[in-house]
Image (cartoon, rainbow, N blue to C red; front, side, top):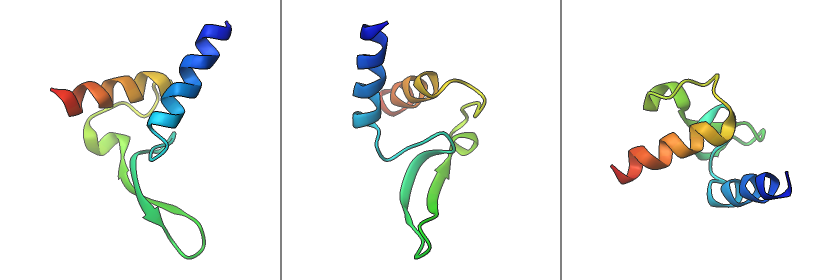
Length: 63
């Protein structure tokens, strides 16, 4: 369980420019809302767990 938590933390640090809605956060509006490329736009199901989305996105970027 601790190993999984560390892996989630590592992924979060590696992909701090993404979140549950965005595969890539390009920036933030003056009001603080993020904007960028959504998971659907890169062909990844937004309903997947965050860790799975990040792994798939990383595989796409390397492929």
